[in-house]
Length: 283
Length: 173
Image: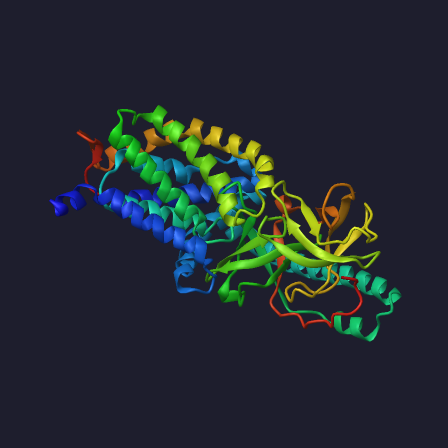
């Protein structure tokens, strides 16, 4: 009788067990390096060629045949030049930040940070499968020495960090995702805070004391203290500061510098940044 | 049947991950994987089906969000609800499937957000709601053609369906 019950209800029982397993994934907070998360790389790998082909078709309209037979040389040159341009732009942004910081009593320490970091260019080949989260799929993975946790930048500013890496593709958690946060500060007033993503695609700077000097139009840059993003990279611009209402902190809305929808190529920093001493910005 | 749903899931994921880059709103991309889970629940009743739903959710998690389990949970739950609806009512046609897909997208979007933020930001739900409603509506609209497509593919591959006392049963799982 008992066996008959089990057999008759085998589908809902199996489903319920699997539901419990998925709930366990959720509550235990599986990290990318754990064994249970590794098959994700295989799934990403299975889909990467299709995504890559679709992205190329959509990007250029030239098609795969065009890419492989007519413009192979030109495209390789183009890719190399784009990567070089991206490096130069990043370097320029960092130098501009260095100049500002020099005005704020920083010299030798900042020179160290001006040292170029190793990076790899990667094409964007996909976006998040749901409308809820903000992630991108990159062409390039462990085969290109990419690892989870590496910083991803564009010529416009900070993009996000790698959260999953397959052999030849990887996923970036954008800074405007609601699960994303990075340490940053106001370039003018040196006020520090945590920049986090919100649901409506924007950013908010959290934990800024009400007495601090933050204004609309201020530039927000990375502090380097999170150990992921080098100091002085452009995050965005303050669009609104709400001082009214309850609470200890200001509500600082920030518009991201990078246009995540138009990203075609990004830079992944393959070299971990040295930790700067916790000095100048006010906490 | 496993191979068919594997191919359909990968195709759905390729469409979802590619299309959302070129549309002005990511909410304009219907959740095809959830539609497939509803189809699986309403018309496929073997013990392998919930495992397939679980695998579909896991594959979705490979391309969505930062936390493993949100989509696995949502897709498996969608399958189970669709299964129970199909088993205990006569409503297992495309219209019922569309309604189920609509509800499933809403539950996945709003519930997934609450779970992934560990209920820390319930105030942001009202910002998320319009986008979730838009995506749920588009998914519901596109669900009947997807059901017709999967039924057509099953027929073409010889995976015929027959009516059982507890709903439709697929052969050849």
